[in-house]
Structures are given as C-alpha cells and as structure tokens.
Image 1: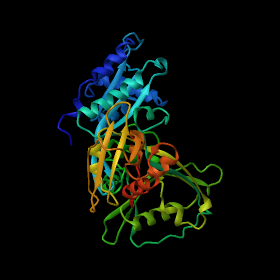
Image 2 (image 1 turned 30 degrees about the vertical axis):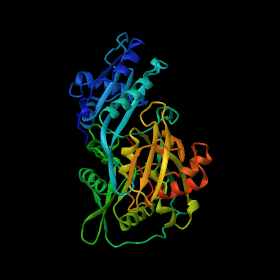
Image 3 (image 1 turned 90 degrees about the horizontal axis):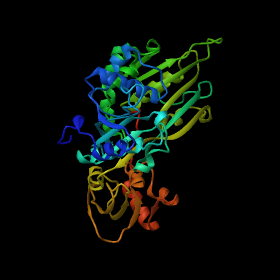
Image 4 (image 1 turned 120 degrees about the vertical axis):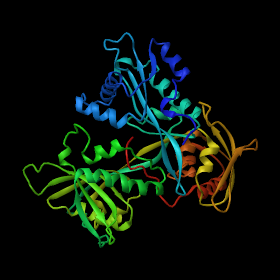
Length: 434
C-alpha cells in the first residue's frame, strides 16, 4: 500500500527527544523477541485494567498481534524496567470510503500510560510520533477507536462513525419483518472463525468507515483464541441462500439461566450480513431464540433496519455514541480518494495546529462524482478545522450541523451545496474495535 516498510519504520526523533527530557526512553520493540514483547503485552493489558495474561494467552497475543508496529516508552529507573510505562501500536489497513473505494489508513491502537507516570508528556509524544510516522510513510489518514473520548481531539482526531447499543425486550419486540427462505445452521467455532473472515471480507468494501480485520480478531470473536475465557459459551449460526452460499453470520453468548430458566439474556457479539435476506433471517433467529427475554446488541449501525422490523420500537432501548475517529493528514489525497453525490466547487480553508492538513484547498467535483483537490490562494468558501473535515469525510455528519455548533464557518448557500456533495447513500459504520 505504501512504498516503505511501515512495520520497521524507525523511532520518531522528536517524540524520543520529548520523553528523554523526562528521563524516559522511546523504543520501537521487536515483536519476535518474547523476552521484550511479553512484558510489553502485560503492561498494555494492565493499562486497560485487565488481568495478567497467562503463558498461553501471551503466546496467542504474540501470534495474533506480531504483525503490528509496537512503540513503548520505558523508564530505566523503574523497579521493573522491562515493562513500558507508555504503549501504542499501529499498522496499515484499508478503510472504505463513499463510492466503494478504499484508502490506506494508519490504524492506531493500545494507547496507554501507566498511572505512575501521568503528566510527563507520554501520550502527546506517542500520538504526535504516530502521526509524523504515518505522514512520512505517505499515508493520508489515521484512525482509532477510543476508550477516553476527551483525549484525541487535541491531536486532530474527530468522530466519523457512530454506533448504537441495543437492549431489546423480546416479548415486546415481536418480529414483523421479512421471513426469508434459505436456511440457518449452527457452525462449530473453527468454522465460525473462517466464515466471519469470509463474509466480512466481502461486505466491508461497501461500507464507508469499515476496515480490514485481522486473523486474531476472528479467533477471539469465535472463541478459538488461546487461553480465551468462556470460549465454550460462544455460539455461531450462519444463513445460506437458495444456492447454499453463506450470506451472513451471527455470534452470540447466552447468560446462565439463574432462577428462571425462561429468562436468559442473549448477547449478540457480532452479526454481519451480505444481503437483506441474511440480515432479516439472522435477526429473527436472535429475537425469537427460545428461553431468551432480553437481547443485548452492542456496536450496531446508527441506521439499523431492525428498528422497522419489530412490532414495538419502544421495546428496544437504543443508545448512540461515537465510535470510529479519523484524522486527515493529506487533504488532497483523501478528498480525491472518495466519490461524491453532486458536482460542486469549494475552496476549503483547513486549520491544523500540527501542520499536516493546514492550508487552503480547492475541491472540484465533476458530474461523475470524481474530484480533484489542489492548493488555492482564493478566498475560502468554507473554513473548518482538520477535526471537522475528518468528521464530514464519510458523510456521517453534515457540515451544516457542525456549522450550527460553531465548528464550521460558511454562508448557508455554500453549506447546502457542500452537504449535497458529501451526502452518502450508505450510513458510515465501523463494526469492530481496534
């Protein structure tokens, strides 16, 4: 995807100098060396408040995550200097854009700072180092999902996809949707892993905001990861069409029954569908599952068709939150990579305190939806931050909405034209955490 070997990209000199001022060391670690990688993984796990990994889990993590580039911030004076006090990992993946196109993206994950080393500039050094590394590799976009949403705006990231968490009372949410032909079958965990990878791989290109998955994700999702707790509770079902082709897969776990055997809780871990029939058949199966009174379904789309397939929408409690955050690094490269719904021409003044995207850019969109973006010295039609532009990139939020919030400056007519061009038929959606 990029000319240089991103896995072995060197340490960022500015980030190394920033942490060195506090007596710390910035290192890109060797994931093939268990003596180095295992303490790193333990420190990252601790940073996200999870328990210590077993030897089996460490081996699985080394195998599942070794393809990524890992950076650690180390304190040579620490009692255990083998464990970093700051962690971040990253890799190149492809993210879907409107129009069915994809763009290489620098995916960032595992950002943690030990509570013993707060307020030492560790997070800033790591994140700015990641952005500089991505930019030097020729990448135009960075992305992440977050545990603390207040951290990343200062680095130019902003929400671009939103997710919904559902809690459904099955007795109220009676199925009224389609009842497709085709068949449902349970699949074993090994088969489930392969089917998830296959269907997601076919579907993701049609979804703005979706990214490539990695084998370790499907191992964990299917309950086949080494040392995984409660793996035997994972159940998988697939939908096949009249030709026998798998068009959708669902993964779920049932709670222990407690005192009332008819009131299990079903947690839907994942549901991916290639066709409307697969979507309807799998959701009907989930909502009509025997002995289940509540279905919990986290991280669904912001525009879930399910809402219109049940008798009582109030039987479902739905909470919406931001999920996928993006950060544009190269404005012309990103804006010309997607397609648009309407022709138009706009001069965008983009502000970026870190400098990557700062400048004025003329975006010209032709009647086919293709665009050219170039530097411009003309007066701007729209003024916005890199954060705001990153949010509107996929069409998940309108520029006029951000203007009402004081985040975009433009006359009403210009905003209406801009909104029309950036509109999408597919709601942006990221179905996984990374």
